[in-house]
Image 1: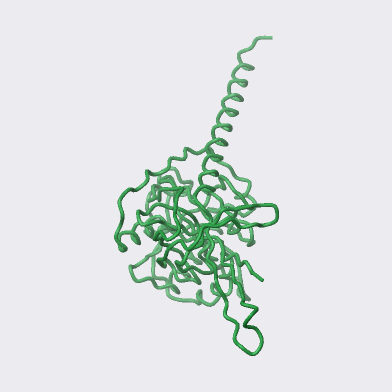
Image 2: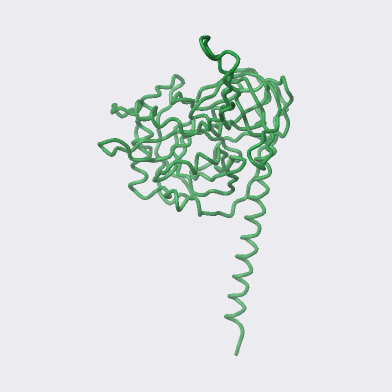
Length: 329
């Protein structure tokens, strides 16, 4: 029987292991940031050679401090918060990229999506990491829907590859059935990945994510199959790929050789072989399933339509208020 494992929340035990007290290796930067409610954006030092234990510890410390200072929305506030945004997508890349260039392009736009919780007897702050990626230079990013729903947390932040730690300010669109969401982080311009609604079986693909606390891991493979998966009455198109990912990778971009996003990491599905059960070992097949960009683009249109609708309603209320003030009895 096939078992589907959603992989965004399995880092709970890993986070506990990797956030042992360590010396602080970064300083909060007093970088000015236009448009933020708070004048400074914290930064975490990310070297080319990543020290996962230090990054985990520092992210937990910085994120916990942001919660305590009231810089982050609670889960309840975040899920009901809306913003009017102008969502401009980057242009598609048409150039095939070398592996190192592709990895650098992904790293610039991929973020650690961290939910802040208190854990253990000491009640310390712990950052529970998943993965996301920017689709707009204004800080709009994509991750899996279960990342924002399945865990109780006190706030959500993202760690950008340049070390900035940004508060997540709004859920712009959310589809729990298709397990994809679009959110908004705040803190200045960012690098973003283009969205391309294509991808044929056999095509080269790459994933950058944070599996089991190994931050900014780059893996490569190919599309092994395009398929439709049935979940109750829902029929969802999926990409199956051979590029490695694991717990903590949920929401990661699946990019083609040009660096355009053709899908996002969703789940691992395992299939034990019943013919070999008994005295013989039973090998397990693992299918790496990813959503398709067409479902992200559908949410992009929802964001644009909702923002336009709220803008019209706001303008109408303003006109009505002005009319009432100028009308004589």
